Length: 280
Ligand SMILES: [Fe+2]
Image (cartoon, rainbow, N blue to C red; front, side, top):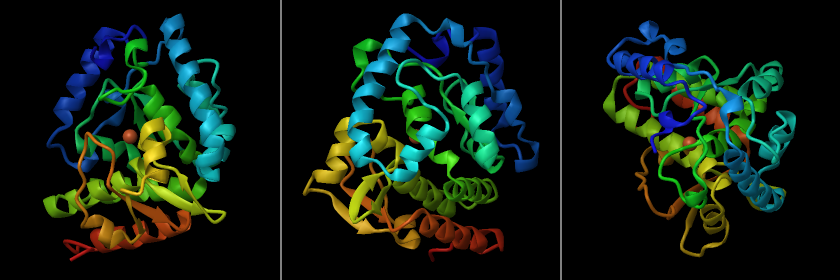
């Protein structure tokens, strides 16, 4: 099922948003209109099964994450009141999130062209899928859903330091057209936002959404002797290629989110100053 076929999304609004997303390809940064790509979350259209799937996964995962997730993630989850009993309303999440960091989350009809995705981030807005995975594929879903996007990603947006990092990332990515740098930025996103680990209280903790939202991948990241866990170094990250569709063999470990923010500021500074590659 494509994510736009979900009853919470109005199909004509979704078609218009998809067209706007397709049309944004090739536009310059200042011409991209992110509002045209948003869809309304018709929250009352979530089925009992949607709420049940959310509850089963979140209840189970939270029990584990209390031990294994970064405190910054856990604090964020409480701050924006992500609850296990029902699929969150983005409007309610945003009411709590905006006063903390100015970030907000918005429904979109699926994948966006890269530049449009970056344009959202550059404005402290997070495009999110709003469909819920079906009960028949609770353990594995090839594409993001609201569990990956909101449960996995959004709690960190409540932290001012991570919030600054992610906006800087978006600005840098929006403003480069160099394919080598674009690839480096994709790697930075992958090894931090999606699959990042952090050292906290003398232990390894999870913060990347791909690790937060997947029990199997999260466990593998922390426990498997097969994983090469490297100290975070943004230039090394930018030059490490990644593979999808199986558990990650290489992960990078932050000392702190300050380290991530400061490294990104430096990387972006090189880019925005006109250098072709911070990692050359
Ligand atoms: Fe993600």
